Image (tube, rainbow, N blue to C red; front, side, top):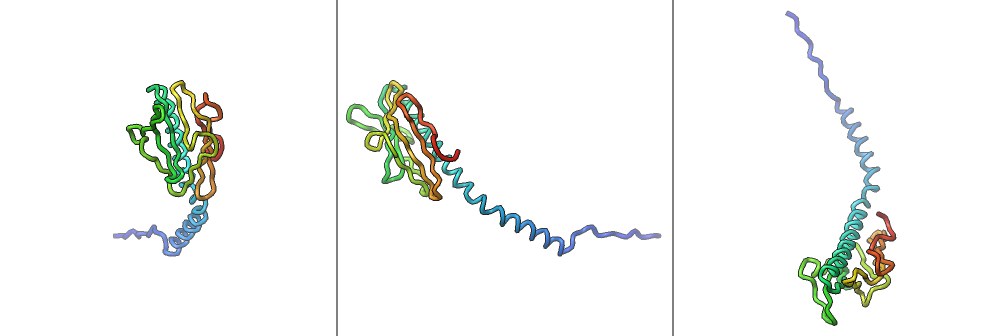
Length: 160
């Protein structure tokens, strides 16, 4: 009776250490370039959320035939949506009627236009021309603007 020899098909400890070292070096080289990726995604999300607020304000002003105001509050670094009837301003009855804060690492500024820190949306689909800037802690800037009363707000500067 003959015995067949069983050959071990395995890696040696040295081979495993070499492979793990190569993987560690590759990850260490790639990590710095991935660090800013989540910051850019947060900036895009904040920009998209503000654009959604402007679109909602415009459509609600048309739908309800009531002037809507998107107020930008530098003290809280956020914004809220209200309706205005004459001199009375009332927050809308939804989540947009509460201050929507920007993430802590962003600064939110009304650069130009607006009336006393507010952008008005009228029932005839016009709005107050304005430029809004969102700046991240790393110095990335996105600008959102409406250059004429008939245009919607859109991204005019910054990475997209």
